[in-house]
Image 1 (cartoon, rainbow, N blue to C red):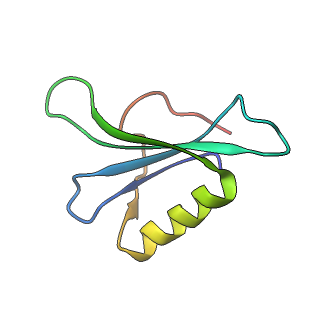
Image 2 (cartoon, rainbow, N blue to C red):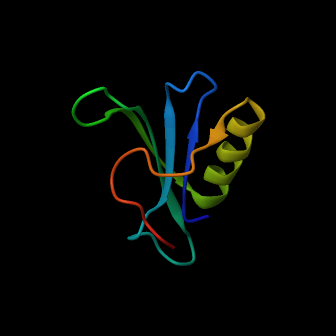
Length: 82
């Protein structure tokens, strides 16, 4: 998993999953940011988690079973190609 985006069924809250570039190769970690787009100005970021890659993948799968959908393009910030 490199970078991915999930949005709730109401189109309000967004989760951003992205690799921690400074994590050890033998123990990869990910940042998971939760926020929402704002009509004007920068996004409102409400939460950040720092999880092992396996835990992040479990959260990704769990959110999708709860109805969260993938976003085709980044909601904020720079896209990271991994």
